Image (tube, rainbow, N blue to C red; front, side, top):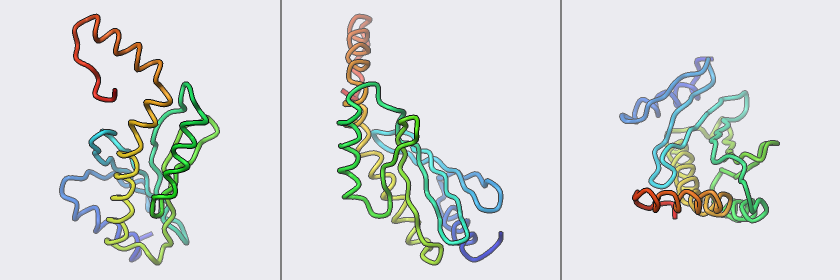
Length: 154
């Protein structure tokens, strides 16, 4: 599928000098964005007949406070452009966006992937703190006991 939309996506990735990308067949791209709080943000783009779907794994299913974590992320959906937090059947959280194929341009890819980076980075620590608080407390107690500094997530 060598067409103008796929070429625009390839061109956008080529212009990102420090961003590695792997092609998956004729219509897929995998890359990893680098955040400040969520250090690695995997992204899969799949070009379909009518849309470009952007997916990113955000976090594994929380250990605790499920409803609070999901409510936090649902509220953040109100602030995102084309992306939404979504759940797999396992409870794992994804960021998913759909862009109409005719709207896929370099500017739109900048906007969408920039929003993905911002949404993942901004929501990560609050969601992790809520969903894994007991684990984080145990880890901090262990760090203190062995003389290691605090994990910045706390």
